[in-house]
Image (tube, rainbow, N blue to C red; front, side, top):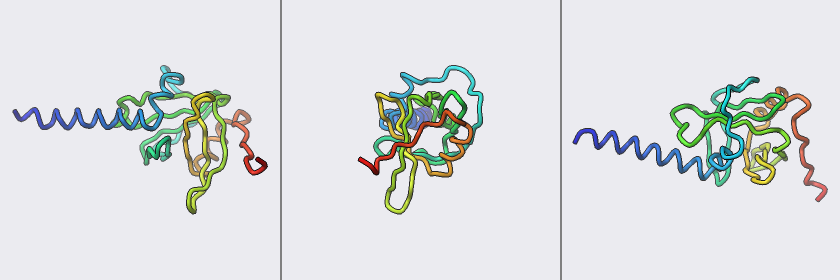
Length: 144
């Protein structure tokens, strides 16, 4: 009987984690860009970002960048249905976005998928530095 309470909490945790992975688009990205090897490149732990449908990943992401692409990983506690990803730069487009008083870089992940990843400019600058000349060109929507 005493096992039911803790077991229920574990099941609830797994369901919530899987649901966030689905809502954010991480599960969809994993079908195409799952990383099954070790990432080699610059990494920054405890980063924050926002993805599709206001799914926030606050201080739980590891973001990385190298010439191959953008690396996304999450703390092990939240990793259920969130495998590490490596998205090639040619599958990413970017633009600036303003929400209320804050400016963000919007990375659109997956050419056909278009799953948004909103980053603070300072975080995007670190990724850009590590990507070198492979960093995607910023879309200029002001002329449209």
